[in-house]
Image (cartoon, rainbow, N blue to C red; front, side):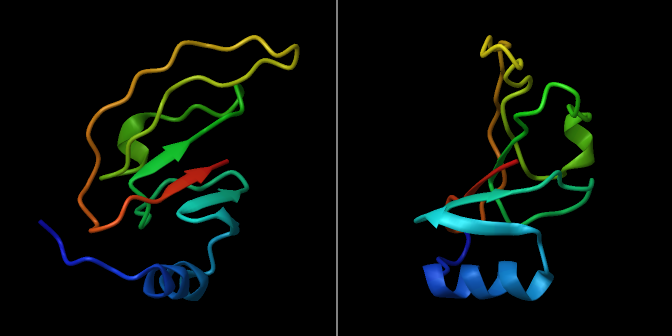
Length: 93
């Protein structure tokens, strides 16, 4: 199991990396469309139907597939086990 990070250490890591996201509740971050790459989050939820890249674009991060339609209808999603960063933090974009 990984080393447990404090919430403050995690926040500093995210801010230092310059990610376009903000913490809206403990361990819940909301941001804009992420570019493919490595992120310190365990889960990334991509809500926009028009932006659903391949899961391999975000190594070590998992999240439901699909998104919300403009009329409020939802697509089915599927998840898997993500990386072990010592904390669970979720980014919603």
